[in-house]
Length: 213
Image 1 (cartoon, rainbow, N blue to C red):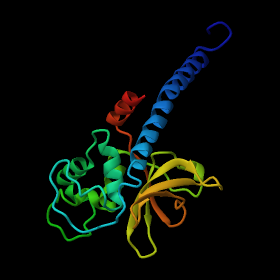
Image 2: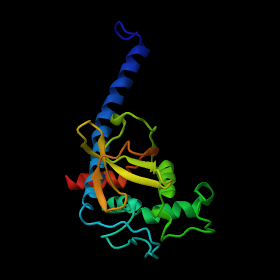
Image 3: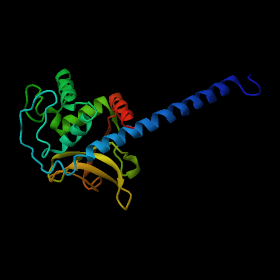
């Protein structure tokens, strides 16, 4: 006994108090990382005005097509690159090391650093492996700023975008993406079939975000 309380009760209360302190530290940093990613993606609006899915041989690492064009995955790649996180290199290296776990939809016999990171199924697999998989939900409150969402479009092709902190009049989070007319921010979260929901906030992103404040 400690005073009038059993020792186990005291220890459990101390554990809960410590847990609350950890959450109080982690949650603001988590939210900050998400918002930094959204801000980086938003900077592409008005700059990337075209959708062009043509294969281009890219420099490696750090390769990109001209900023005035791209595809949905380029929105994600360019946002992370502002914080020194090169998905071209990270995805390619993960595919090279773990070839068997990545999708085999393109009849390739080996990794290709010019295109691996620009394919939605590859990005989704990478974020599932290296980040956090969040359950797909019809609840708009489950989607936080900086979350990554994948869809299956009516024509059967995959798509990806970044959840914004801004919301529609009905309270649905907006999405920053490029679906055909350049990078835009609009209310499409529940317009298509959601196939994946991820969070990828590596330590480097958190550290870079702190430097911006």
